[in-house]
Image 1 (spheres, helix red, strand yellow):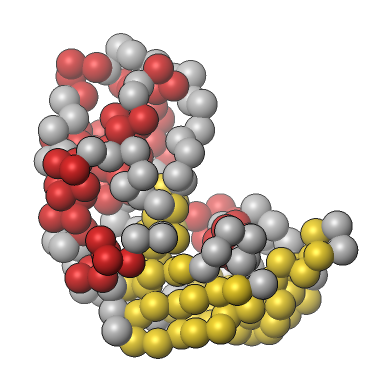
Image 2 (tube, helix red, strand yellow):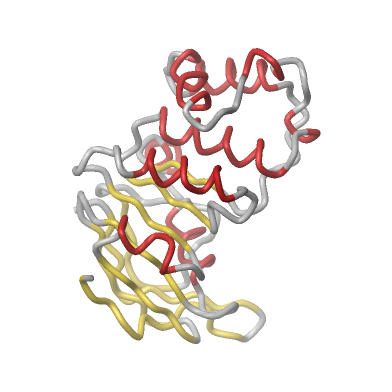
Length: 213
């Protein structure tokens, strides 16, 4: 089992943002995680990534505690945020850094980026934070796909992509090996439905629907 969450709870400033959430993610699950703003989706993902301690319950990723064993957990998860971080490294420096820390050949990132018409050589000296929103998103997606993670988490991954970029992104995802899992935080089920086999809907911190599609 890739992720096992059992009755996990989290409260912020007196408000319960995760309320006895129980779910499992197995290899090959392609999940659309849906719900209105404030439903608990982002909090759940941040708990998986070890950013947040849960107040109670049990949470593990491949048997590891996301907080106590965060370095090990992050070896198995790639996360593509909706709002890219303001990284000041140049593209070349960022790719080389990712290569060293993830034991990854930087050429693989360049190859994945090219599939989305992002020419790394043309922009390698530019600081990441100065790229357009679409270019940032493409590079983060290329890094995630290159790492061969067991679970890829995408937070509104196509929000900054133009129609052609969205089409290229979906084509890339269709090539991900079946044993790897994906989780999309999205409001656009119609766009990713062909790439998912499960829908989880959250509301007021609870999982109110979890079904195969």
